[in-house]
Amino acid sequence: MSDNYLQPGLPQPAMREGLDLPYWAAAREEKLVCQQCQDCQHWQWGPEFICFRCHSHDVAFKEIAATGTIYSFERVWHPVHPALKEQGAYLVVLVELPQCDSARMVGNLLGDPHQEVEIGAEVRGVFEHHDDGEPPYTLVQWEVV
Amino acid sequence: MQRTLKGKVVVAGVGETPYYKRGEAPDAEFDLALKAILAACENAGISPREVDGFSSFSNDRNDASHLAAALGIDYLRFANMQWGGGGGGGSGAIANAAAAIATGTAECVVVFRSLAQGQFGRFGQGPKIPQVSGDGALTLPYGLMSPAQSFAMKVKRFMYENGVEQSALRALSLASYHHAQSNPRAVMYGRPLDEKKYDESRWIVEPFHLYDCCLENDGAAAIVLVSAERAKDFDHKPCYLLSAASGSHHRAGASAHNAPLYATSGFPDLAPHLYEMAGVTPSDVDVLQCYENFTGGVLMSMVEHGFCEPDECNEFFIKENLIAEGGKLPTNTSGGNLAECYMHGLGLNIEAVRQIWGESTSQIADPNVSMVVSGPMVTPVSSCIFGSENTL
Image: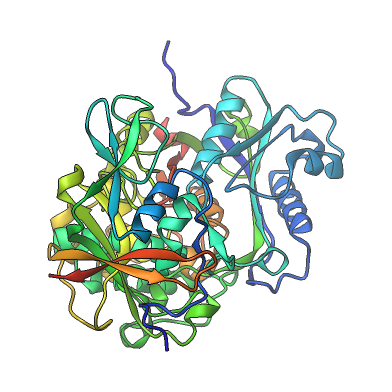
């Protein structure tokens, strides 16, 4: 029985290359980062090559507080991947980050999958390590404060 | 110079293969495309060799040049693919074809979509890959992977913001299944749905029950478009294109669910252009075909096209308002994607034409304005409006 929220076997982050690599590297060190334009100082998510506001290429991953609010959520019942055949219901949550120009991040909401979920509730990030991943990786999950 | 598609193009003919459950088509996908195109040409009463353009969407696998070769077309003048997945490009493909005809780039364009999921795999499943980078890495490891899962949080947020109840989604499903019972082509013909059966059906992902989700089917559909100068050359009464529009709102394609306007089906920017080109208002629309990937998308689309205020959904979305027999706005009169067939929505465009022609299995009395909404919640989305001769 895995300690992780979802059963093993889902696609995992590649951790090799690409725009999202610094995010995954930071998560391994239990740091949550978001992309910030170093020219206009605005935040954006997911990662892009340029700032969508000022078109600067000087965008960097900066550490942020792993706190936010639930913007929306869903309780999934029907498995669409073999790894989830025995999973049962699970919660996906969309977390809004007020400290990052209201950028949003996707994760799972830890705890009872049948819990009543309140949009607007405060949540904090939980670093879920998958040390047996190939290569090892860390997901940023969320729990209600 | 007035720039418009209004009245420039007519529908010459429509065609479909039989609609099959997913994976059960006896023919190859390319052959399904050929059969639908040949049927549409026969319906129009024109030779397939007259076709000089193809327009499709959603990365249809059936290449225009290969179709032209198989059909022995002399000169292929227009080969067009609308970007974007799902059914968001259905009416967009009609817009592109109509633009080609209106500008003299082509004379006779077939809009088509062909799907054989047995041959090429299903939509409603997550990708079975060990690793993912980029956008997918931000969602797939959390079990957020199918279309239903990708859209449920938008609908949940819309329902939260506007106090929409589950019964509003249910009404859309009941209407589609109601109309399918009159349509022998429908996959769900002879399989009616009532409130109890809906309520007791399993959750796929909240807020979608099984019956809130579209079918997955094999088959093909095609529509032949020509210049309005030829409107009187066909057996059907003229069905004009009044307008067609496609597009995406600000950062609709931002990854990891970051579109600033999130609780939307994607039509707030598009709808005003659609109505302006057609010269009609929502109250002029006699009958609507509104793409059901999931009922929540239909609901948001109808709000965003001006048929209902966001805070009036619970009163507006009742079955009685949506059915052909006396409904305020008869919707999805063939059974649509929920109960007729999921042909990435092109069947909805065909049904809209049939309403103008007077050939629907749930026919409205003398409709003049017949509208289609394609692919809510994907990006880009599209819509189009067909009209009778009275609307010009």
